[in-house]
Length: 464
Image (cartoon, rainbow, N blue to C red; front, side, top):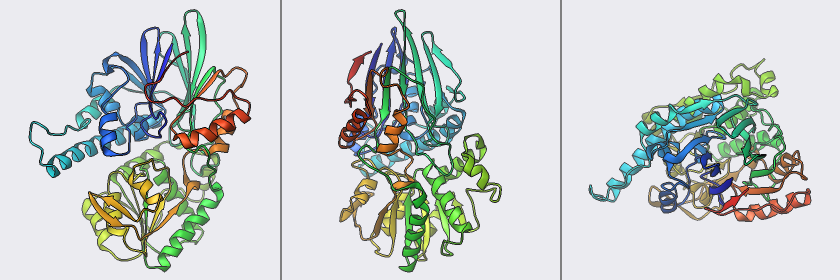
């Protein structure tokens, strides 16, 4: 069997790994690369194999950097099946259509801005028709239920605790009279999330593909997140400003809203309006409400006295463009939560353009921002940031809350891996991380008794 690393190889976005078993091909994830436009344009148009020769995709979860190239795969000839959990299936229905809309609008904008003619028009990666066709190929599979994409391969999902429906996967591979197991963590969540169950230990395996997003880093304690959030809002309101929160429509938005719901119930928030300005987040929140089987026991207890953990009196979900524009016309203090989390697309760009230059305001970053994204430039507190092609001075306060990250930090990742038998585990491959984070994580795993991991680059293959 042959394993080729393609996406999220020594970088954080665009998760994609190709496994070949007995001449048959399966992808683990098929994610969109997010970063510098020129790099994204090139990387998102390449696949590790001809799409028509790929028989199945095993999807760990619905985040666009793990699922966002599926419609492109279909457009290029893929006609196999995409396996995922039922919650992931429902999320993809909303997210991939939304992504297709963004792809079409981005291409239209660039063609208009650069005055491209018919001969050199930029084609979108995919469109709504591609997303709709791809969604017909999704197959929902429950956690801890074995399924077989083809003879010689069996797969089982376990709860990764990263976002609604997220899964680790264990592949049981039979080839040449031998049976081996390959594990893939997908993205590992944090313990004690206020909404989701803790990450579930994986079965023992012979090789492991492990995420490394926060290698070398330790998050703020989860229980401190609420107080930090309350302090940021209160301080900004005293200055008469707005809190602008770039947040992924899936996962981060629901957790931030739930924290604000808790603070409201506890009387710890100033009486200001709060807006979730994202049609996708509105749809995704309804999916969250439809899948209580994924909830943590703590949320079930909370719902006994507050049956709506994603809504409260001062919270408004915004769909209409006109209502979104009115938020920027207002000078009153408020909280605005909008996608995307790395500030690379969507309505958050308009809110940042209108607010980053005002020192009364705060930009609150609540998730990982990859290099060369607007979100990362804000985290780095660059003096000027480019939005819609124009430079804007960054005078707003910048706050980063890693406690709200959906990714395990280094100690949490090491504890997650430590459930696996080190004597059996032949090799760990680190993916979905930057090299400066992968090195300390590799050291930590060696200290925990594992053979030194490897962080393969894009296109690197291994015979297993």
